[in-house]
Image 1 (tube, rainbow, N blue to C red):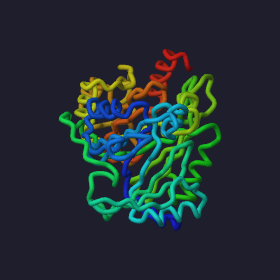
Image 2 (image 1 turned 180 degrees about the vertical axis):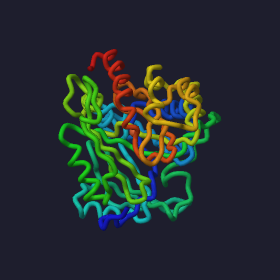
Image 3 (image 1 turned 90 degrees about the horizontal axis):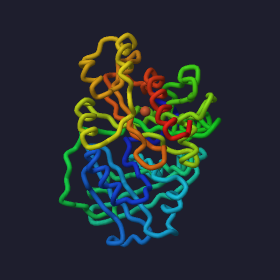
Image 4 (image 1 turned 60 degrees about the vertical axis):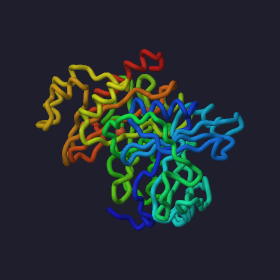
Length: 366
Ligand code: FE2
């Protein structure tokens, strides 16, 4: 899949930065609950005055947890409005200056001009453009850098080094946008980034009595970057997409899906460490084989760990969703194992929505 617009190949997700209320505690949560390893730190000790950041890593996934040190910090402003959430989806490129020039010339709004940062380990060039809501894409060019993370960060080496949970890489990141904004956002990725549309579905595909959503999945040419874009559709009551929008106060990243190659072991490890997942009714497993056919895994084991299954014309996938990982009912994680499937679990949405609606009813937000 190529398009003439794709003049700056994306080589993957470089990092995801969360703006949070308390970065020290959030970093500990990602270590203890999800098995991330401590990597790097920046804050007062390194010369920052308005924020501090803890960087954690597991295999190819790098998360940055950033909190404000002063009420005047833009991090504090972001957090006051949105609560804990994704600020930055950073993309690895060979040329951050070219990526910036290409995207801004096609209509992207600048968030940061190309900037070279250096230290003893070499140089990194970054630039940034805005996307949905207050979220930004940072382009990271690090071919000439051998340091841990970025210039300005020092090694963070606490004694606590938890075991990992088999989380391998970012599979996709879903953007949740407002009413009538899905097409505009999908067009942005098409026209500005040269992405193509992989799949679309609408409220005829995905709805329960109360909940409905529309989605378009935008992917880059090597399919390493997959951004489903969701918007709410009219239902009898408030959908989860609308609930996200209300509590996040605008568009934002709704979930990050993380790949594993052994979902049973990963989910067991995460549950052991206290990660809460959406409830899946036992009845789901009564009919799932009729829908997905033969699978390699033992259905009883999947049922025990409440793992969901779906199939497309390429293969099947196993997945499960956490509950929101912060106070507001906003951002959550998906754990996914692909067995050749390239889709996103549409067949599970019905079962899932019914589970989410139970949670919403408990919150009084349905
Ligand atoms: Fe997903």
